[in-house]
Amino acid sequence: MASLDTPRKRAFVQLEGRDFLHPYLKAEFEPVYSLEIVRQLPDDAPEDAVRVCIAGENDTLPETDAPVLAVPEVIGTGMTGMPRRLAEDVAAGRFYLIRDTDYPRIRILHATDLASAARIAAERGTSGIWSLDDGKNPTLNELADALAYRMNGKRLFALPRKWARLFGIGRKWMRHNCAPARFTSFAESAGFRPNSVCEYLRTHVYDENSL
Image 1 (cartoon, helix red, strand yellow):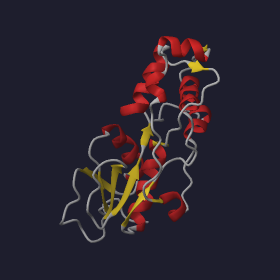
Image 2 (image 1 turned 60 degrees about the horizontal axis):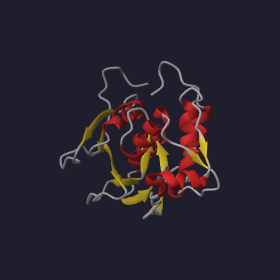
Image 3 (image 1 turned 120 degrees about the vertical axis):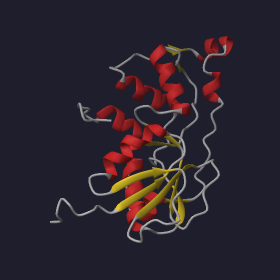
C-alpha cells in the first residue's frame, strides 16, 4: 500500500458548464486521483495523468487526443436544462398525463453513471468520441412519473386528450425532439452498463451521503 505521503496521480476532466456535475466527478475520482476540473485540458499535464472530456452531444466538441464523452440530458441534484424544467413542472403540478397520447422519448443519463463512465474512459485513455445515455430512452411521461415518485410520490393528474388540445396543455413537451446518438456507444465499446434513469429514481435508497 502506498504511503499517505505519496502524491496521487492527477486526473483532468474537461467540462464547461453543468457545474452540478462537479460533486459527482469528485466522488468518483478523488478517492484515487487528485482531480482538476478544467475548461480546457492543459498541454503540460504529467505523462501519468488521466484525462477525459465531457461535452453535450450538440455542443462543439473539442479537438483532443483525450477520450470525449458526448452526452445528452443529465439527471442529478442541481440539474439544469430540460430535465430541470420538467422537474419544476412536475413539482408545481403543471405536468399532466394526457390520455391516448404518445409522448416523445428522451435520451437521458444519470450523473452517477456519467461520473463512473468518465473515470473508465480516462483510465482507458483511448482517443475517440463516444455517445453515452442510459440505453432506455424513456418517454417524457415515464420520466415525469419517475421524478414524481422521487418527490415523495407526488401525484400526476391525467387529462383527456381533447381537453389538453383545447387548452394547449402539454404542447411544449410534445415538441421535444429525441435525436439519435451521433457517435459509437461508449456502453458497448467499454462494456459499461449504465442504470435506467427511471428505475434508479424509483429504487435507489438515498441517505445523507447521496448526491
